[in-house]
Length: 138
Image 1: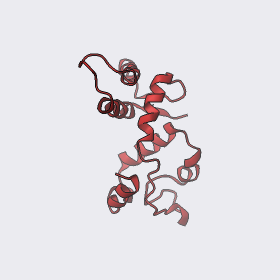
Image 2: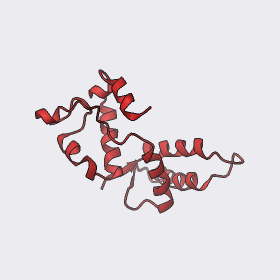
Image 3: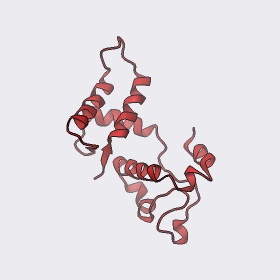
Image 4: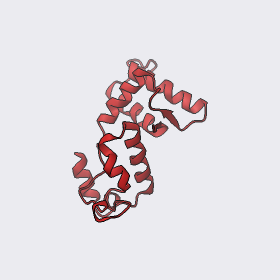
């Protein structure tokens, strides 16, 4: 199983900060508190990933709400793996990732997203960036 990277925990925290701000500037609503505890433990133990399968239920629920607000697939409908490429020129996923995408866990999908975003050389990040924005509904 893939881990949930600390940057995804941060993104979920920021999502919930906008959605449910602190009523008094000090106390945290439940979703934020659950995610903040996971984040604090990652920082304390110098870890970069939380185990997707053992995430506390409240934190997992809050993270999944954020996850559901993100684009599901990096696909921009230009798939070079169908022509035999090991790595898709359009989205940057490997042939295996393209084939298994519907079976992958949210953590595995986010790990793929993280890798292709860091690499940044798929067409979705340069030639067809506007198509990627259209397909994500943003």
